Amino acid sequence: MIKKEPLVSILINNFNKENFCEKAVKSAINQNYNKLEVIFYDDNSSDQSLKRIVTLKKKNKYKKIKIIKNRLRGEFSSHNQIVGIKRSLKKSKGEIICLLDSDDWFKKNKIKKIVEFFGNNKKQDILFDKPLFFSKEDIKKTDIKYGKRENSWPRFPPTSCISLRKKSLEFVIRKIFFKDCPDLWIDFRLASFYAIKKNQFNLSSDYLTYYRQLPNSNEKKYEKFLNFAWWNRRNQAFKFINLINKKNYKKYKTFDFYLTKIIFAFSSFLK
Image 1 (cartoon, one colour):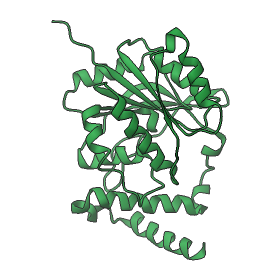
Image 2 (image 1 turned 180 degrees about the vertical axis):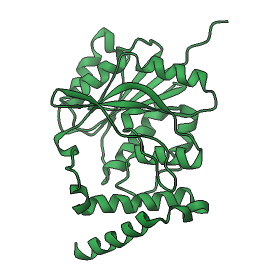
Image 3 (image 1 turned 90 degrees about the vertical axis):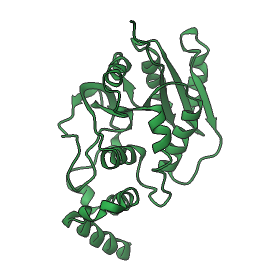
């Protein structure tokens, strides 16, 4: 009996990435797996990125791209990202969802590998693949040890490395949208929820996603410890873990927890 290939929906979120978004879309369309759809969500960009994708869609090869145009952005970028994914999710028809930021791109065989995993692991709802870091024409593999950690949130690859079953994502995305955690992006929210609440952290051994490191994304070693924004994010991270896991939250009150609370309070006083 021949296995039925599932439809895969690739959701691309874009805001002002005119120099990169075409590469992201093309990498999604030009997979060696044919049963897929691409949904491009433009979050009211002020550059030419939407125009570029509209022009690309006129070509036969790319005419199946679905475009969603948002006309009003909210105050917080992380919330805008979640809203964009929720809107794209409603338009999607695939059984499997792959997330892709518009400045990243996929290897040609990514979707085929993702489908194989979910086909062989019926009870699993999330998969992370490994990123290839791209910066100034240099491509390198990461040495980060991704995975679950005791008494802490997991170490996880970026958003473009996340694939999920649609039905599961539809349920979970409603559980992770807390407005008082505006500095937490969806990769943290998804990775933490699935690892802590569902005991799922599946990491592929394959490097299937090119993750673009922009100049402002590289913090020098130890520089982050002097940055109020970094401590603010950590404080929100503990708040998020408490919101999703109140019953077992005590185990997260480690030295790291108290240090974060003290430094955040002190930094807020000095700010």
